[in-house]
Amino acid sequence: MCGIVGYVGKNISVKKILAKLQNLEYRGYDSAGFAYIKNNNIVCRKKVGQIVNLINATNDQEQADICICHTRWATHGKVCENNAHPQVSYNNNFAVVHNGIIENYNQIKEKIGINKFSSQTDSEVIANLMEEISGAIETRFFEMLKKISGSYAICLIERSSKKLYVAKNKSPLYISQTEDGYFVASDISCFEGNDYYSLEDGMCAIIDKDNLKFYKDSKPCKLQKTKNIYHIDDIKLSKFSHFMQKEIAETPQILFNIAKTYSKLVETIKYKNLFNNIKNVVLSGCGTAFHACLLGEEWINDTYNLNARAYIASELRYKENIIDKNTLVLLVSQSGETADTLAVMNMAKEIGAKVVAMTNIEYSTLAGGADFVLPLCAGQEIGVASTKVYSAMLAVFYILSTKNAKNTGCFNKIITFSRQISAKFDKNIIEIVQKSKRVFFIGRGYDGITAQEGALKLKEITYKDACGYYAGELKHGTIALVDENTIVFAIITNKNIAAKTLNAVEEVCSRGAKVVVLTDQNLSGNFNYIKLQTAADEKLAAIAAVLPLQSLAYEVAVKCGFNPDRPRNLAKSVTVE
Ligand code: F6R
Image (cartoon, rainbow, N blue to C red; front, side, top):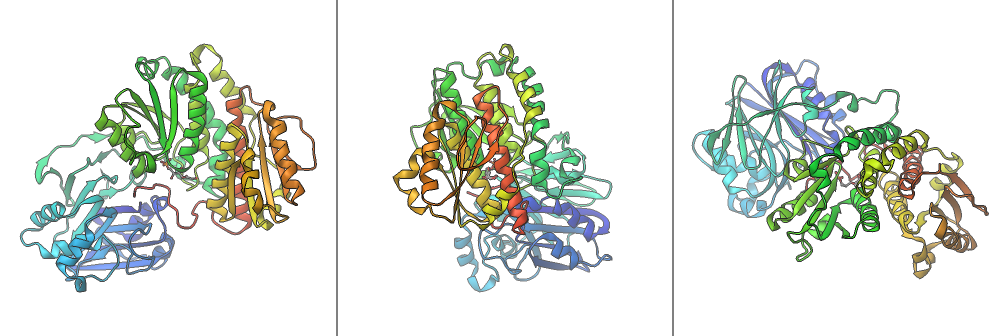
């Protein structure tokens, strides 16, 4: 993870450059730093915590014509100024910002001499290798790249050369020219609508204020510009207090967008042929995206005569004999940059399987590498906890698992449903959750998966001890944890098995737990209620049920005084393995 920004051009305010870095804060926010060149010396400043701490430590008058900055999500070494980036070389000649992991850093460190290192990071080897190699800076840079292995987006400066040395392998990196000069960044959100170059793996660039040169294998090469389709409004809060709140509220509009987009997409030959000559469907993703895959698995199996199965990407990538060349590998990822999901893509491509990407980011590595893209049409998701995109994933799986979607009223059902959904619930519940020691989410069938997603959302932003279970499983062990300090959310959207989930409700009530039932049925009992709107299809009910759970997590986090957009230890884009 981590976000990097590099700049070379006119003399501009350092704060202006840091404002760009703030667009990348979703990639990591435990510490931040910058380095620029002044009188042939490297000026470097770092602060622990969010970028605002660094901005507050920066003078309004401070200017730079070359600068590198970084926002960190710690991998190697604890969170402290020493381990924050930029990392400066032992003779103060080079400074580097890095996103990714240098896998052979220990060997390099030992070779150079441990005493020449001042941080616990893997990244410091990049700067120190530049000191160790002799020759012109350009040659040293190419040689240094040959010596490191792993994933990296690198932006490096040398104290006398006024050039940015940039390289990319498996971590995203983009370059754009603006009126001020050239910017390098981990995400195109920093480019304010300007077109950009998307570096390919193994590519480098050397940039000064007037020139941008690309290299592959140390030799000059060319790269085409890409049109910037980024919507700047997505990164504005407007009337909302947090992005998570804004993004949950955007769900109806996104469902509408999906219905409109897919009513055309399903007519394309590529879409129609998706399942042709396919025996097995493997669905894969991580975290929330994996929960969407679990529902996708159920829905595809219920519709087609196919064997669909969902796998956690970080597990699947080490399993042999699951994917063959007749498998359709459907990879689900909001960011399209999740390292484990990309590793599955590479594995599937090597085997010769057909790869389909369901992603929200059309310019992502996943979208670029797939044979076909199922867009999620949700706009940028800034809040670290995925909300609107989860609902988008379910809507796309709903379409995908509807045979002949165009003629079944599927799109109209989504549009009608999008106008009815609500994330509201009785605010008293927030306080009960806040006071409870333990929170369980239970359900059967599709609701069992919603239960897991509800629990993930709550624990990641409120740090509550929360778990999602299939309701029938509770009595096989976990019920031992249930007592009067427990609150149980029971999700019931399937009439046929409602009575069975209610049995579990009775069992936890008997052990003193408080219970909230989320249902679109007419049920009565000694419990609190969240009434869900009735969906025209049981699959859409999964979206109706998850929305109040997302809102619940949000409200509890705010009530506890936590920032729901920036949960501890997490980052939006998990680009490490
Ligand atoms: C949880 C959450 C994560 C992501 C996971 C995969 O709210 O957001 O669990 O779902 O890190 O990320 P993507 O979808 O970008 O591959």
